[in-house]
Every structure is written in structure tokens, then in C-alpha cells.
Length: 272
Image 1 (spheres, rainbow, N blue to C red):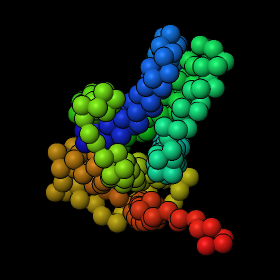
Image 2: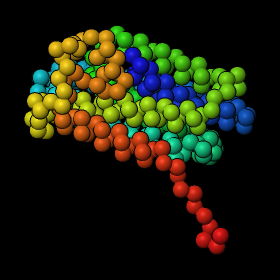
Image 3: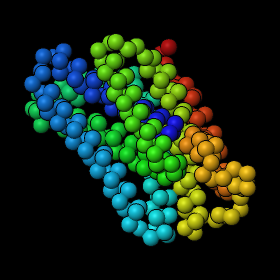
């Protein structure tokens, strides 16, 4: 539940802020007649994201056991790559996001309503499609569908409420700290998804050492227990973890978090 809540809150708030920035531009520039095109683009982007989630679920359900292992491992690696890239992208562009979107909105408005809708579609779809893929792989990692779904719903509802509050200035939130802390949390969740992907590729036969366990605690902590589910949904813990899973998980978290938290270098003028 916690991991899906974090994913939905972080990604949902990013999308809500993007929509809020575009709406604010149209309202402030007295071009409200383009709002319909904007919301149409947002609706289509959300629909495309839901369609991707449905496609992934349907495809995995129709595959053989071996095919499902390959599919799950591949989607896990793709999801981790996308989320890692997006976390660093947001860190790099967060400060100038409003100015960037205002510039794109100005160009889109000049080109017409279709361009405005297209801008909104791609801006939201970038977040939505990534979220659908990451949530799908996280659902597979957690395994508890009901609690994971509850976390998803609560995360999305909270992100929409916060986004609306920030837009009308009834909620003050330090976005810099929020994105930094939630970025670290997403990286931790992604580490668990990566470990799951390694496990699936080991079961399929692409990677070695599926039975070389770093630990096997199933004798006193059943895989279906609450503690195992809680640890699995937060840090990617598995009751049977191979040495390769542990090595990849630790290397990814160590390198990625260290790089993410390293302050960006400030460029100084050559004549300074």
C-alpha cells in the first residue's frame, strides 16, 4: 500500500502541477476559450495511461508461465529505467518548469486549440504512461492487490487535492523538499522493482544463481505475512533473496541515491 501511495502521490502531483501551470497561463492571459482543448488533451492522456495499464495486465495474464517471467522481468527493467530518468529530469528542470511550460503554451495558443490540446496530452501522458508501467510492475512486486489498490487511490486523491490547493494558493508546500524526499522514496521503490526483475530473469534462465540465496527466512516469516508484505512494498524485501538480487539492489540504491543527492555544480563565468 505504501509504495503505490508514494508512486501515485509523486507522479500524480507532478501531473497536477503541469496541468495547473497550463491552466494558470490560459486564465492569466485571458484565453479561457482554450481550456476545453486543454482538458480534452488531459482526458485523452489519462485514458491512454489507463489503456496501457489494462494492456499490460491482460498481456501478462494470457502468457505462459515462462512468458510471464520474461514479460515481468522486461517491464520491471524498463519501468526502473524510466522512473530513474524522470526523477533526475524533474530535479534538473523543476525550477524552470513553469517558464518552460509558459513558453510552450504561448506557441501552442498561437497555433490554435488543437496545438493546445496536443501540448496538454503529451505533458500529462509523459507522467501517466510512466506511472502506469511503474505501478504495474510494483503491483507484481507487492502481490497484495487490494491494499496496493487502496494506496493507489489514496495517492491519486491526495495528489489532486494538493495540486488544486497549490493552484488556488490555499496550500503552501515546499516543492523542492517534497520532490527531493519523494524522489529518494521512488528510487527505493524502484530498487525493489529492479530486484523483482532480476528474480524473474533468474527464473526464466537469463541470469544465473536463482537458488544461491543470500537469505531464506520463509521458515519464520511466511511470504504472505503482513511484515513480509510491508517490507516488500516499501524496500523491495523478499523472503528468499538471491545474492545477485541483493548485489544489484544494493548497487542501484547506493549509486543512484548518492548521485541524486549530490548538489548540482554551479557554472561560474570564465572571467570570474
